[in-house]
Length: 358
Image (cartoon, rainbow, N blue to C red; front, side):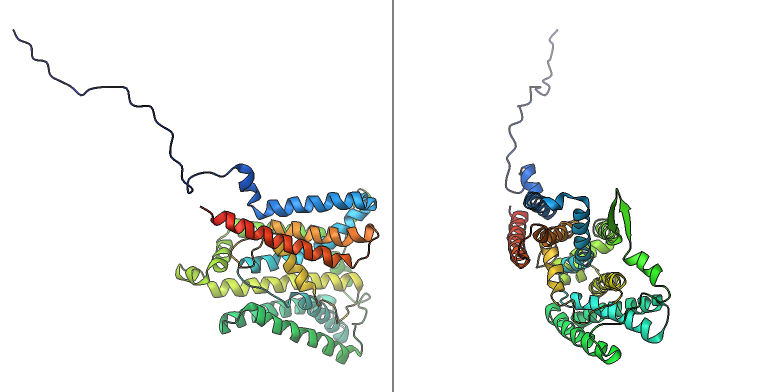
């Protein structure tokens, strides 16, 4: 009998997998490079370096009370730097932020004093006015298509003139009247300008508000649809509009957020010093913008975070107070400011190129 053998498929050992080819798109960068590409990491390292420098140069700064002063100085800048940073991520600027703080404080003070009403009435009216100023800036930018730089520069000049002229007209002076003996003042002071004890050191309530606002802004940016809208309109508003992002709503509300920040800081100034100088606030807008830029917000919009400006504001507070504690000429603060700003811009440029490199 003949047997027929049926040939089956040959079974062999599969070839050993060779090394995968990597190109510029799939190759992972080293962890250190990826971390340094995060703007928050760069400004954090910068803040640590500034802190160590002044701890060595100014031994007085090592005291708890001195550090509390630094944190207070940082918080008054940081509270405003946060909404300014969100606006910059959205692709816009607000040069009226500094004088808007004083406008808010003047409104609350003069309205309460001249009408002899509870100071909370003035506080609420000032909030409405601050939000209205933010809405006007945003509406003008959207309606006219003009750069926000020009629109808010006009608002800056208007508010600066109105602050001085109206204060002189109403009070006959360049400062408002003392409202410390009016109804509601003590309650408002607890909210906006009180202090609390931590290990025998008095810490201002603004430090707590600063951190709370930073946490809230971070959550909004990273965990909400509105945060995605902010990045989208800052990156390319036309593309964002094409995919259904409400560009007009997003940009106007960002300007109104700056108005809210101006109101809060203005109330702090009012209830800390009981009176307001109408000529103050000029130049502060540059400090807020610089803190946001140092914190990693790109000038072109579409990139940034809320944590970075926190460290940026801390660097400002540290330099401002560190120079005083070191006994140096305070004029050096502007020089430090220029160096930090220029360095931040160069770092941001490097980050942007690194992020887009293939």
